[in-house]
Length: 265
Image (tube, rainbow, N blue to C red; front, side):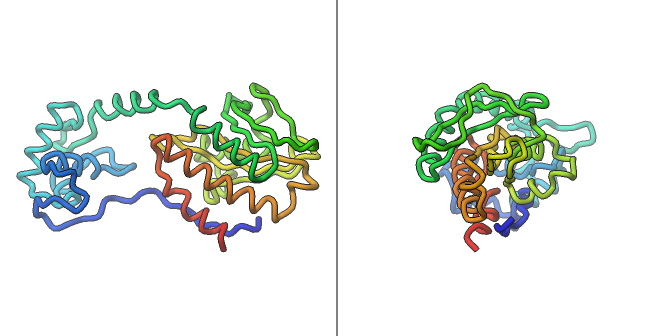
């Protein structure tokens, strides 16, 4: 692999401020809402529960203010008080997240990006999703050139072969160490694994919950597309497109920044 990449770590805990109850520069102008949101945002990806003291420390709010807001959030279902006196996230954020996700359709986000990728790179652009031990072509755009990789929407392939299969396995089987390099790099390449005459590159797209939605992929004849220069260009374009797709679907685009920066070195 000719692209140097850096591992993107998980989102850390929010920065800690001295308790003051003051509203920061990113204020909405409604102090009580900003403080309530600060409490909800204090929970990181690995935080099942937090104490009152820790919530106060992370938000920079006085304990008395934090306790009062926790009571209101608990009443609304956004926070739940646990038997040991600690606090966890309530059911309402999950309900709202489900509504938010359903409000998006992947097609309107993905298809314009596929058209752009195919036009700019001159190769077949596709979007794969996992179906058990298979990968399914959900969307695809083919270039106008006569020699190209031709695949059909709805076509299925084995998931253990090909760049998109590696990406889907890496981010659906996150404990499998075989895919650690793919998870770290945020991309995978294939040189004739499924079809001996085809090369491909693929990157993941994530949703608002940080779950992989599918694999954004470029593929072409190996003799033309399988050169280091073409694969590098394809990976750079795919990462940029995947970041835009992830942001449009409510996800965190920042997880791509290290990989994108690596492409430019």
